[in-house]
Amino acid sequence: MKKLFLGLAVTGFLVASCTGDYKCDCVTSGQTWTAVTYTKVKKKDAQDDCSSRETTYQIADPSTTCSISDN
Image 1 (cartoon, rainbow, N blue to C red):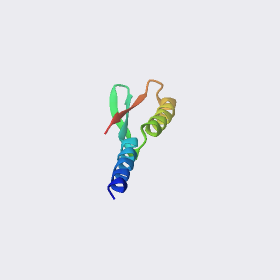
Image 2: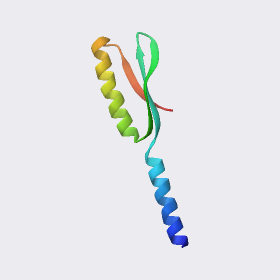
Image 3: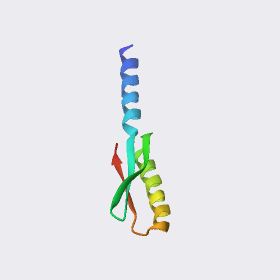
């Protein structure tokens, strides 16, 4: 029983540590704004989406930059 509980606890910790809450903050013409908030996602997935948004926003304003931060 103890081994089962320990196994479940370790698995739960690993799953919880793989995801987090992040936000994609962008800067356009000196104005900072949050483009999107991500909940319980892998950091790599949030970074990929934020980078894609940056590319899209740069069509309207090439100086726009976006980056991920912890929420």
